[in-house]
Image (cartoon, rainbow, N blue to C red):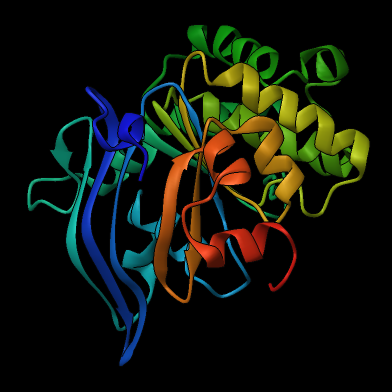
Length: 258
């Protein structure tokens, strides 16, 4: 682990000795890392190595899975998110998630973005401004401002994914988790999402799971390499890609396996 990551003065996320089991099967083994604020951290590794399981620990999505057991500690902004007094609904507001496949609700573009703020008590008079700001932040306002009442499902795949990002931004999270957000998109849409993610890190801490080595190298500040449920190596992206400390990291990055 590199010095600059290991000794983060103000990490947004701290994970200590995280273990997770689905029934008898252990999916995560002693994961520890510190994720700095206002950065993009990419998680790479072969399919089934624990990347998506790990980011679902960061907003307790795994609570929804039967026979899932977790040990260890996950702190976000200094607070143990598995503590007894944690409001999970509030946690998921603060730690937003964008999934692999765009999943807009079957309602209008406007109502998709307004959905979260409405649930959390935003006043009707504030909604127009919240929706516009979120769509602008997700770089899709220009394409939707004259059709806000149109069905969200009428948008293209890339537009739907940016709409889902806007929907996440509308509830004002501080951390955003992306689970392979461009794997179903064409290269132009992928490039737009990548530009958007790099822009968003000014205001948010971002963790992204990706199978795309070039994407991780392009957009992330830090990279973690997972293999068979373990975090093999974690450090600054430049170091991981150009001077990995572990042979298995080098083998994966150079395409020798995975």
